[in-house]
Image 1 (cartoon, rainbow, N blue to C red):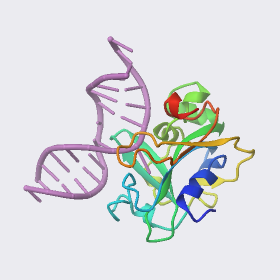
Image 2 (image 1 turned 30 degrees about the vertical axis):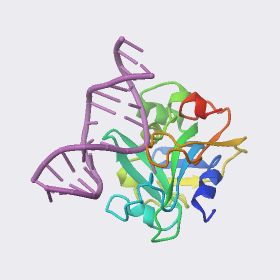
Image 3 (image 1 turned 135 degrees about the vertical axis):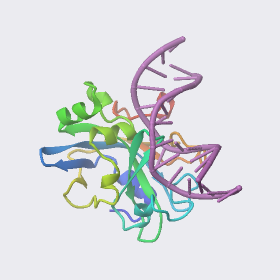
Length: 188
DNA sequence: TTGGCGATTGGCT
DNA sequence: GCCAATCGCCAAT
């Protein structure tokens, strides 16, 4: 696992996100991430440690889950050593495991619509604040495993939906994947 | 104690 | 493309 936030964001493309539940597993391949590095004014760690963002300041490889716009949960992976706040936002996966479970959670049928976007991804996998702080590096309710195939060509772009540091090329995605979110112009 | 706001989404034009 | 929904968080009062 890379020791640098931006490297981790790249590294995670193609890896498997797995939601482990009593009834089985659900998940898929990561196809889109964004890096929120140390000192990044767009990052939630920027203003220092708070109750909400403490997972970002924990050990590497733990989940930081928060609610945005009162509507959607977002999943991040803490990316730096304890005491340093930074993370990687998981923006989209290609569903491969437990697809029916995800369909039920999302209320839509089309595979492409299940987990394209950070809020949809969390809804599909039933991820909320209860998973904040979860260790993603070992099998459990939520974890990340090695991918089962090469991710394809990884490209970079500006990040989506932010106002500060909006021009940095810190978003990574699989070129040509229909499971990637965001406007077409950022997915060339 | 309060009010402005946000790493989004879905529905409508 | 535009915009409302919805609510936890946190800086400032």
